[in-house]
Length: 174
Image (cartoon, rainbow, N blue to C red; front, side, top):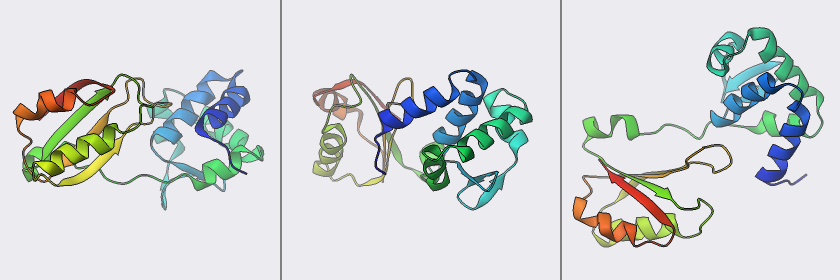
């Protein structure tokens, strides 16, 4: 079965339309790359207690259990949630301590193709290596961003160049 992210969210929305609190649980799972397997929640291979998910989602543990049961009973959703995995670590929070540069781009429309390629090329042309690229999913993030972590500081004078990239609304360097 192949479905795109729009179809997935359509199915999730329909499945949980009568239970918005369960939808909040599902959103926490997807945003954090947490899978559902055997009635339990995992971050890759580490089991996460229902109580921790409940706290983040702003619901009680019974709601988390009900969301898990609903996912596992649905033949379309079950394989999707069984296969979710965390995308990995982000250096953004420790970039300053490591002497890395951070470029954060807010697009006009996150579906505009080429923003990542153009921004990475601009850095490469200045001899700045990209260590990490993090792209927020426009279906999940209210204001999706592209974050590039560079091997070293990013010169502020590049901001006008980044703003010339088609589809870029805002740029921050830190």
